[in-house]
View 1 (tube, rainbow, N blue to C red):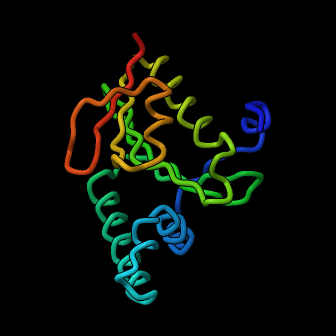
View 2 (tube, rainbow, N blue to C red; view 1 turned 180 degrees about the vertical axis):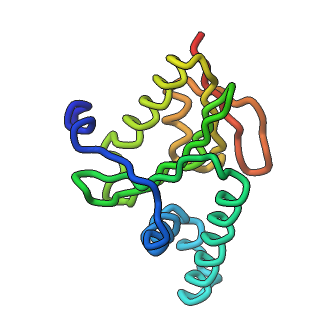
View 3 (cartoon, rainbow, N blue to C red; view 1 turned 30 degrees about the horizontal axis):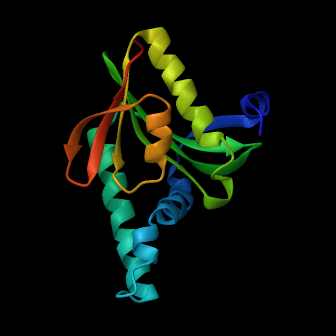
Length: 162
């Protein structure tokens, strides 16, 4: 998938209340740790993922009121979520998640690179938290993010143009 194609066909729109089932599906698709847990029944997994999604969603909506909470659209088809909190000195990538069938198609890389370009133009740091076991960690390192702090099971990573 080329950059030109992505630029032309990739769009955002703010999340709406009607998007909650889709957002929950996207969230659940990222939680392979839960899906692979053999100690939980399917019903227990679904209940846990439901609770975790709404806890995260509530936290984000309460503590990051000024953030952009967007649905990622490819040719008007919802394919993921992109949450960004722009502050005076920093652009925080709060969350980027794509449905599995849209992963490994350069979409996430394209979006993160655009955010880095925004940080470069605005002379801001771009930061994010990523779990130590998240496959996206390799992408962030490849794009120049550096670990600034270890917070439990996550790294706080920052990118700043030299």
